Amino acid sequence: MTRAERKVDHIQYALSTGQSRGTGLDDIQFVHHSLPGTSVNHISLSTEIGGLQWSSPIFVNAMTGGGGTITADINRQLGEVAAACNIPMAVGSQMSALRHTKERDTFTAARKANPDGLLFANIGSEATPEEALAVCEMIEADALQIHLNVVQELAMPEGDRNFQGAVERIEAICRRVPVPVIVKETGFGIGREAAAELNKLPVAAIDTGGFGGTNFAAVENERSKNPLSFLNGWGIPTAVSIVESAKGAPQITTIASGGLQHAEDVVKSLALGASAAGMSGYLLNILLKNGLDALIEYVEQVKNHIKVMMCALGARTISDLHHVPLVIFGETYHWLRSRGCDPDQFAMRASDPI
Image (cartoon, rainbow, N blue to C red; front, side):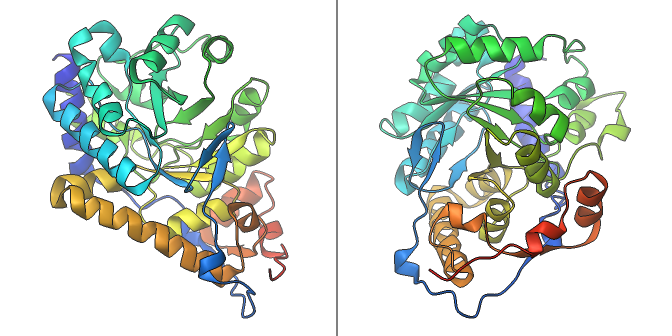
C-alpha cells in the first residue's frame, strides 16, 4: 500500500471508528455566576500563541494531506472554512510531500484557499531541521506543528519502532525554523513528564491531543492483520492532559485538542488552562456529510456559543476563563488527584465580576 493510499484509508477509518467521547470533559461543571457583570458585546475571543494574534481561540487542527486529489480537496475546503471564519488552520503531516513532490499540492491547496490566514505546517519528530524548514516554506507557514504519534506508529503495521533522540531533534528544529513551534500529540495526550521535558526547550506551545477523539490506534488496528487491541484504550483523556501539560510546562502555552466537538468542550478546555482549542475529526465529519456551507455555519455557531458561555461566567477574555471556578467529578477527579494535580483548586478559584 502506498503512503497516499494509507492517508485515504486513515480518513475512512477515522470516520467509521468515530470518537469515543472519553475526553473527561463531561466530568467538568461550571459554578454558575448570578452576577457576571458583563455583556456578550464586551466579550473578546482573541488570544495569543507564540507571538501570533488569533481572533478566536478555536482553530482547524491537523487532519490530512498527501493522499492525492481527495486530501487536496479536503484541505482546500478546510482552508476556505478557515478564511470565512477567520480562524487558524493546521495541515496534516507533510512528510509525504517531501518524499513525493506530486503531493505538495495536497497541502498548498490550503494556502491557496486562505492566502492571508494563519496556517500551520506539520511534520513528525523524526524530521531533520532542514525538512522542518522545507515544510514551512512549502505553505508559507506562520507556525510549525511537530506531531508525536508513538502509539499510532506502534499500532501501524509499517510504522516506526525507534523513537530515540526526539527531544534533541525537536530542540534543533526550534532553533532552525523562523516560526513558532507547537509540539502536538495525536490522540493519546501529553502527560506531566513529557511536558516537563518540553518545558526545557524553546517550544511556543504544547497541543495536548488527548484521548477521546479520533483513535489512531483503533484506526491502525482496523488496517492490521494482527491488531494490537490493547492499545485501543491507551492514552490520557483530554481534560487530564490539559491540566498535566500546564503543570509540567508552566512556561509554555497549552493548546487543547482531542475530541472537542462543541462550544462547551472548548470553554471547559480553556477554563482548565488552555489558551486555544483545536477541532478536527468532528469538523471533518460535518464537512464530508453536510458540505462546506454547513461547516462554516457550525464554526460560526461555536464562536457565538463561546461568547454566550463566557458572558454567563463573567469572563470577558480567554485569560479570565483561567480564573472561573469549576467542579471536577468522576474519573477525571480521581486521575488528577492521584497525579498530584489537586482538582479541588479549580472549585475554589474566584472570578470577580467585570
